[in-house]
Image 1: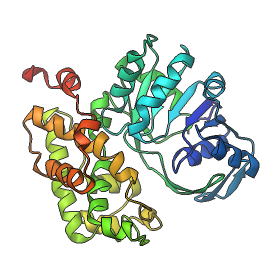
Image 2 (image 1 turned 60 degrees about the vertical axis):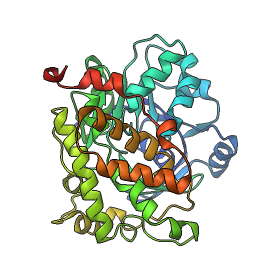
Image 3 (image 1 turned 90 degrees about the horizontal axis):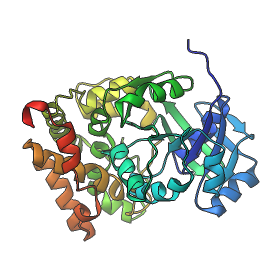
Length: 357
Protein backbone atom coordinates (compact mmCIF):
# COMPACT_ATOMS: atom_id res chain seq x y z
CA UNK A 1 0.00 0.00 0.00
CA UNK A 2 1.33 3.42 -0.95
CA UNK A 3 2.11 5.52 2.11
CA UNK A 4 0.26 8.83 2.12
CA UNK A 5 2.39 11.95 2.20
CA UNK A 6 0.87 15.31 3.07
CA UNK A 7 0.59 17.62 0.07
CA UNK A 8 -0.36 21.28 -0.31
CA UNK A 9 -3.57 21.46 -2.31
CA UNK A 10 -5.66 24.33 -3.55
CA UNK A 11 -9.15 23.38 -4.72
CA UNK A 12 -10.71 25.90 -7.12
CA UNK A 13 -14.48 25.95 -6.82
CA UNK A 14 -16.85 25.17 -3.95
CA UNK A 15 -19.65 23.49 -5.85
CA UNK A 16 -20.87 19.89 -5.71
CA UNK A 17 -17.40 18.53 -6.43
CA UNK A 18 -14.98 21.14 -5.13
CA UNK A 19 -16.34 21.51 -1.62
CA UNK A 20 -16.44 17.73 -1.12
CA UNK A 21 -12.97 17.22 -2.59
CA UNK A 22 -11.42 19.94 -0.44
CA UNK A 23 -12.84 18.39 2.72
CA UNK A 24 -11.83 14.90 1.60
CA UNK A 25 -8.25 15.98 0.85
CA UNK A 26 -7.95 17.64 4.26
CA UNK A 27 -9.51 14.62 5.96
CA UNK A 28 -6.78 12.44 4.41
CA UNK A 29 -4.11 14.58 6.06
CA UNK A 30 -3.23 17.06 3.34
CA UNK A 31 -2.97 20.82 3.77
CA UNK A 32 -5.90 22.13 1.74
CA UNK A 33 -7.21 25.58 0.93
CA UNK A 34 -10.56 26.01 -0.82
CA UNK A 35 -11.00 28.95 -3.19
CA UNK A 36 -14.34 30.30 -4.32
CA UNK A 37 -14.90 33.64 -6.01
CA UNK A 38 -18.09 34.33 -4.05
CA UNK A 39 -17.19 35.78 -0.66
CA UNK A 40 -20.63 35.01 0.77
CA UNK A 41 -20.10 31.28 0.15
CA UNK A 42 -16.64 31.41 1.72
CA UNK A 43 -17.99 33.29 4.75
CA UNK A 44 -20.72 30.68 5.22
CA UNK A 45 -18.20 27.83 5.15
CA UNK A 46 -15.90 29.56 7.62
CA UNK A 47 -18.82 30.53 9.88
CA UNK A 48 -19.93 26.88 9.92
CA UNK A 49 -16.48 26.00 11.22
CA UNK A 50 -15.31 24.00 8.21
CA UNK A 51 -16.91 21.37 6.02
CA UNK A 52 -19.03 18.49 7.23
CA UNK A 53 -18.89 15.31 5.15
CA UNK A 54 -21.85 12.95 5.16
CA UNK A 55 -22.44 9.61 3.46
CA UNK A 56 -19.44 7.43 2.63
CA UNK A 57 -17.74 8.92 5.68
CA UNK A 58 -19.26 11.08 8.37
CA UNK A 59 -16.90 13.65 9.79
CA UNK A 60 -16.56 17.36 10.48
CA UNK A 61 -13.40 18.71 8.83
CA UNK A 62 -12.73 21.82 10.86
CA UNK A 63 -9.08 22.52 10.03
CA UNK A 64 -9.65 23.67 6.45
CA UNK A 65 -9.22 27.13 4.99
CA UNK A 66 -11.73 28.75 2.65
CA UNK A 67 -10.97 32.02 0.89
CA UNK A 68 -12.03 34.29 -1.95
CA UNK A 69 -8.46 35.61 -2.26
CA UNK A 70 -7.03 33.78 -5.26
CA UNK A 71 -3.50 35.14 -4.85
CA UNK A 72 -3.26 33.88 -1.28
CA UNK A 73 -4.80 30.52 -2.19
CA UNK A 74 -2.20 29.88 -4.89
CA UNK A 75 0.71 31.16 -2.80
CA UNK A 76 -0.08 28.57 -0.11
CA UNK A 77 -0.40 25.60 -2.47
CA UNK A 78 1.54 23.37 -4.83
CA UNK A 79 -1.16 21.21 -6.47
CA UNK A 80 -4.10 23.11 -7.94
CA UNK A 81 -7.28 21.11 -8.46
CA UNK A 82 -9.62 22.87 -10.89
CA UNK A 83 -13.17 21.86 -9.92
CA UNK A 84 -15.39 24.33 -11.72
CA UNK A 85 -17.58 23.80 -14.82
CA UNK A 86 -15.48 23.56 -17.96
CA UNK A 87 -17.12 26.59 -19.58
CA UNK A 88 -15.55 28.71 -16.80
CA UNK A 89 -12.00 27.45 -17.41
CA UNK A 90 -10.99 30.40 -19.56
CA UNK A 91 -11.89 32.99 -16.92
CA UNK A 92 -10.13 31.19 -14.07
CA UNK A 93 -7.02 30.50 -16.18
CA UNK A 94 -6.69 34.20 -16.96
CA UNK A 95 -7.18 35.11 -13.28
CA UNK A 96 -4.64 32.52 -12.10
CA UNK A 97 -1.90 33.36 -14.61
CA UNK A 98 -0.25 36.24 -12.68
CA UNK A 99 0.12 34.11 -9.54
CA UNK A 100 1.35 30.82 -10.96
CA UNK A 101 4.93 29.80 -10.16
CA UNK A 102 7.32 27.08 -11.32
CA UNK A 103 6.42 24.75 -8.43
CA UNK A 104 2.72 24.62 -9.31
CA UNK A 105 0.97 21.65 -10.90
CA UNK A 106 -2.54 22.04 -12.34
CA UNK A 107 -5.04 19.17 -12.49
CA UNK A 108 -8.40 19.76 -14.18
CA UNK A 109 -11.13 17.65 -12.57
CA UNK A 110 -12.37 16.63 -15.10
CA UNK A 111 -11.15 18.23 -18.31
CA UNK A 112 -14.26 17.25 -20.28
CA UNK A 113 -13.07 17.33 -23.92
CA UNK A 114 -9.80 19.20 -24.66
CA UNK A 115 -9.63 20.49 -21.08
CA UNK A 116 -5.86 20.63 -20.49
CA UNK A 117 -5.25 21.59 -24.13
CA UNK A 118 -7.57 24.58 -23.89
CA UNK A 119 -6.40 25.59 -20.40
CA UNK A 120 -2.83 25.83 -21.71
CA UNK A 121 -4.09 27.91 -24.63
CA UNK A 122 -5.94 30.27 -22.27
CA UNK A 123 -2.80 30.77 -20.17
CA UNK A 124 -0.61 31.46 -23.19
CA UNK A 125 -3.16 33.96 -24.51
CA UNK A 126 -2.40 36.23 -21.53
CA UNK A 127 1.38 35.88 -21.86
CA UNK A 128 2.03 32.98 -19.48
CA UNK A 129 5.30 31.25 -20.44
CA UNK A 130 6.25 28.89 -17.59
CA UNK A 131 6.35 25.21 -18.49
CA UNK A 132 4.41 23.87 -15.53
CA UNK A 133 2.63 20.48 -15.51
CA UNK A 134 -1.02 20.64 -16.59
CA UNK A 135 -3.05 17.48 -16.38
CA UNK A 136 -6.64 16.35 -16.50
CA UNK A 137 -8.80 13.51 -15.24
CA UNK A 138 -11.43 11.69 -17.26
CA UNK A 139 -14.04 12.00 -14.52
CA UNK A 140 -14.45 13.47 -11.05
CA UNK A 141 -12.93 11.28 -8.37
CA UNK A 142 -15.94 11.52 -6.04
CA UNK A 143 -19.65 11.08 -6.57
CA UNK A 144 -20.86 13.92 -4.40
CA UNK A 145 -23.39 16.69 -3.91
CA UNK A 146 -23.30 19.92 -1.91
CA UNK A 147 -26.18 20.18 0.54
CA UNK A 148 -25.27 23.75 1.47
CA UNK A 149 -22.07 25.77 2.01
CA UNK A 150 -20.21 23.79 4.68
CA UNK A 151 -22.01 20.45 4.20
CA UNK A 152 -21.27 17.92 1.46
CA UNK A 153 -22.53 14.42 0.82
CA UNK A 154 -20.10 11.91 -0.67
CA UNK A 155 -21.83 8.86 -2.09
CA UNK A 156 -18.74 7.03 -3.32
CA UNK A 157 -15.20 7.24 -4.60
CA UNK A 158 -14.43 6.05 -8.12
CA UNK A 159 -12.68 2.68 -8.38
CA UNK A 160 -10.42 3.95 -11.16
CA UNK A 161 -9.42 7.45 -12.23
CA UNK A 162 -7.61 8.02 -15.53
CA UNK A 163 -5.16 10.92 -15.56
CA UNK A 164 -3.03 12.38 -18.36
CA UNK A 165 -0.58 15.26 -18.70
CA UNK A 166 -0.67 17.74 -21.56
CA UNK A 167 3.09 17.31 -21.91
CA UNK A 168 3.88 13.58 -21.65
CA UNK A 169 7.19 14.48 -20.01
CA UNK A 170 5.19 15.74 -17.02
CA UNK A 171 3.27 12.50 -16.56
CA UNK A 172 5.54 11.11 -13.86
CA UNK A 173 5.50 14.42 -11.96
CA UNK A 174 1.70 14.43 -11.84
CA UNK A 175 1.53 10.73 -10.99
CA UNK A 176 4.02 11.10 -8.14
CA UNK A 177 2.04 14.01 -6.71
CA UNK A 178 -1.37 12.32 -6.86
CA UNK A 179 -0.66 8.66 -6.08
CA UNK A 180 -0.15 9.39 -2.38
CA UNK A 181 -3.75 10.57 -2.10
CA UNK A 182 -5.47 8.75 -4.98
CA UNK A 183 -4.34 5.14 -5.06
CA UNK A 184 -6.80 4.34 -7.86
CA UNK A 185 -5.25 6.59 -10.50
CA UNK A 186 -4.12 5.16 -13.81
CA UNK A 187 -1.74 7.34 -15.79
CA UNK A 188 -2.52 7.49 -19.51
CA UNK A 189 0.02 8.29 -22.22
CA UNK A 190 -1.92 11.21 -23.67
CA UNK A 191 -4.77 13.62 -22.98
CA UNK A 192 -6.31 12.10 -26.09
CA UNK A 193 -7.59 9.30 -23.84
CA UNK A 194 -8.99 11.55 -21.11
CA UNK A 195 -10.52 13.96 -23.63
CA UNK A 196 -12.36 11.20 -25.50
CA UNK A 197 -13.41 9.55 -22.23
CA UNK A 198 -15.93 12.32 -21.61
CA UNK A 199 -18.74 10.24 -20.12
CA UNK A 200 -20.60 13.31 -18.86
CA UNK A 201 -21.25 14.21 -22.48
CA UNK A 202 -23.15 10.93 -22.81
CA UNK A 203 -25.01 10.91 -19.49
CA UNK A 204 -25.93 14.56 -19.03
CA UNK A 205 -27.25 16.66 -21.96
CA UNK A 206 -29.60 14.37 -23.85
CA UNK A 207 -31.43 13.04 -20.75
CA UNK A 208 -31.75 16.64 -19.51
CA UNK A 209 -33.22 17.69 -22.86
CA UNK A 210 -35.69 14.80 -22.71
CA UNK A 211 -36.79 15.95 -19.26
CA UNK A 212 -36.92 19.73 -19.75
CA UNK A 213 -40.65 19.89 -19.01
CA UNK A 214 -40.11 18.14 -15.68
CA UNK A 215 -37.22 20.46 -14.84
CA UNK A 216 -39.22 23.58 -15.75
CA UNK A 217 -42.12 22.43 -13.59
CA UNK A 218 -39.82 21.95 -10.62
CA UNK A 219 -40.37 18.20 -10.45
CA UNK A 220 -37.88 16.29 -8.35
CA UNK A 221 -36.73 13.09 -9.96
CA UNK A 222 -33.53 11.05 -10.03
CA UNK A 223 -31.52 11.99 -13.10
CA UNK A 224 -29.88 8.61 -13.68
CA UNK A 225 -32.59 6.30 -12.36
CA UNK A 226 -35.78 8.05 -13.53
CA UNK A 227 -34.58 10.50 -16.19
CA UNK A 228 -32.82 7.83 -18.24
CA UNK A 229 -35.58 5.46 -19.34
CA UNK A 230 -34.99 2.37 -21.53
CA UNK A 231 -35.62 4.36 -24.72
CA UNK A 232 -33.33 7.20 -23.64
CA UNK A 233 -30.65 4.67 -22.68
CA UNK A 234 -30.84 3.10 -26.15
CA UNK A 235 -30.20 6.51 -27.70
CA UNK A 236 -27.24 7.04 -25.36
CA UNK A 237 -25.77 3.74 -26.53
CA UNK A 238 -25.95 5.01 -30.13
CA UNK A 239 -24.39 8.32 -29.10
CA UNK A 240 -21.62 6.47 -27.29
CA UNK A 241 -20.85 4.38 -30.37
CA UNK A 242 -19.94 7.61 -32.16
CA UNK A 243 -17.54 8.48 -29.32
CA UNK A 244 -15.97 5.02 -29.56
CA UNK A 245 -15.68 5.30 -33.37
CA UNK A 246 -13.82 8.59 -32.95
CA UNK A 247 -11.50 7.03 -30.37
CA UNK A 248 -10.79 4.16 -32.76
CA UNK A 249 -9.91 6.64 -35.51
CA UNK A 250 -7.29 8.11 -33.18
CA UNK A 251 -6.06 4.58 -32.39
CA UNK A 252 -7.04 5.17 -28.79
CA UNK A 253 -9.24 2.21 -27.80
CA UNK A 254 -11.47 2.60 -24.78
CA UNK A 255 -14.44 0.99 -23.08
CA UNK A 256 -18.02 1.83 -23.93
CA UNK A 257 -20.17 3.57 -21.36
CA UNK A 258 -21.74 0.36 -20.01
CA UNK A 259 -18.29 -1.12 -19.36
CA UNK A 260 -17.23 2.20 -17.80
CA UNK A 261 -19.99 1.83 -15.21
CA UNK A 262 -18.69 -1.61 -14.34
CA UNK A 263 -15.06 -0.46 -14.13
CA UNK A 264 -15.77 2.65 -12.06
CA UNK A 265 -18.70 1.56 -9.89
CA UNK A 266 -18.81 -2.23 -10.19
CA UNK A 267 -22.23 -2.03 -11.86
CA UNK A 268 -23.48 -5.03 -13.79
CA UNK A 269 -25.96 -5.13 -16.64
CA UNK A 270 -26.33 -6.51 -20.13
CA UNK A 271 -27.43 -3.14 -21.48
CA UNK A 272 -26.82 0.44 -20.40
CA UNK A 273 -30.26 0.82 -18.84
CA UNK A 274 -29.88 -2.21 -16.58
CA UNK A 275 -26.34 -1.17 -15.65
CA UNK A 276 -27.58 2.28 -14.63
CA UNK A 277 -30.39 0.77 -12.59
CA UNK A 278 -27.80 -1.39 -10.83
CA UNK A 279 -25.53 1.58 -10.01
CA UNK A 280 -26.36 2.18 -6.35
CA UNK A 281 -24.04 5.19 -6.26
CA UNK A 282 -26.62 7.02 -8.38
CA UNK A 283 -29.59 6.19 -6.15
CA UNK A 284 -29.69 9.61 -4.50
CA UNK A 285 -28.46 11.81 -7.36
CA UNK A 286 -31.36 14.14 -8.06
CA UNK A 287 -32.45 16.10 -11.08
CA UNK A 288 -31.33 19.55 -12.26
CA UNK A 289 -33.17 22.30 -10.40
CA UNK A 290 -33.53 24.66 -13.37
CA UNK A 291 -33.03 24.69 -17.13
CA UNK A 292 -29.71 26.57 -16.84
CA UNK A 293 -28.18 23.33 -15.56
CA UNK A 294 -24.52 22.60 -16.28
CA UNK A 295 -25.75 19.43 -17.96
CA UNK A 296 -26.58 21.76 -20.86
CA UNK A 297 -24.38 24.82 -20.43
CA UNK A 298 -21.22 22.82 -19.67
CA UNK A 299 -21.67 19.48 -21.40
CA UNK A 300 -22.92 20.83 -24.74
CA UNK A 301 -20.19 23.48 -25.34
CA UNK A 302 -17.28 21.48 -23.85
CA UNK A 303 -18.42 17.96 -24.73
CA UNK A 304 -20.84 17.62 -27.62
CA UNK A 305 -19.40 20.54 -29.63
CA UNK A 306 -15.70 19.55 -29.64
CA UNK A 307 -16.52 15.84 -30.04
CA UNK A 308 -18.73 16.66 -33.04
CA UNK A 309 -16.10 18.91 -34.63
CA UNK A 310 -13.43 16.23 -34.20
CA UNK A 311 -15.74 13.61 -35.71
CA UNK A 312 -16.33 15.83 -38.74
CA UNK A 313 -12.59 16.24 -39.29
CA UNK A 314 -12.00 12.52 -38.80
CA UNK A 315 -14.89 11.53 -41.03
CA UNK A 316 -16.38 9.26 -38.37
CA UNK A 317 -20.15 8.89 -37.73
CA UNK A 318 -21.69 11.88 -35.95
CA UNK A 319 -25.43 11.81 -36.68
CA UNK A 320 -26.42 11.51 -33.02
CA UNK A 321 -23.89 14.09 -31.84
CA UNK A 322 -25.36 16.50 -34.38
CA UNK A 323 -28.90 15.65 -33.28
CA UNK A 324 -28.16 16.48 -29.63
CA UNK A 325 -26.56 19.78 -30.62
CA UNK A 326 -29.41 20.73 -32.96
CA UNK A 327 -31.99 19.91 -30.30
CA UNK A 328 -30.19 21.99 -27.66
CA UNK A 329 -29.76 24.91 -30.07
CA UNK A 330 -33.45 24.79 -30.98
CA UNK A 331 -34.82 24.39 -27.47
CA UNK A 332 -32.61 27.06 -25.92
CA UNK A 333 -32.40 29.45 -28.87
CA UNK A 334 -28.62 29.49 -28.47
CA UNK A 335 -25.92 28.58 -30.95
CA UNK A 336 -23.84 26.41 -28.64
CA UNK A 337 -21.30 25.82 -31.41
CA UNK A 338 -20.37 29.48 -31.38
CA UNK A 339 -19.82 29.60 -27.62
CA UNK A 340 -18.30 26.11 -27.35
CA UNK A 341 -14.91 24.54 -27.97
CA UNK A 342 -15.27 24.61 -31.73
CA UNK A 343 -11.67 25.37 -32.69
CA UNK A 344 -10.32 21.83 -32.59
CA UNK A 345 -8.16 21.80 -35.72
CA UNK A 346 -4.82 22.22 -33.89
CA UNK A 347 -5.72 19.41 -31.50
CA UNK A 348 -6.80 17.21 -34.39
CA UNK A 349 -3.60 17.78 -36.35
CA UNK A 350 -1.42 17.12 -33.32
CA UNK A 351 -3.07 13.88 -32.26
CA UNK A 352 -4.35 12.23 -35.43
CA UNK A 353 -2.56 8.99 -36.40
CA UNK A 354 0.70 9.44 -38.28
CA UNK A 355 -0.62 7.57 -41.29
CA UNK A 356 -3.28 10.26 -41.72
CA UNK A 357 -0.96 13.23 -41.48
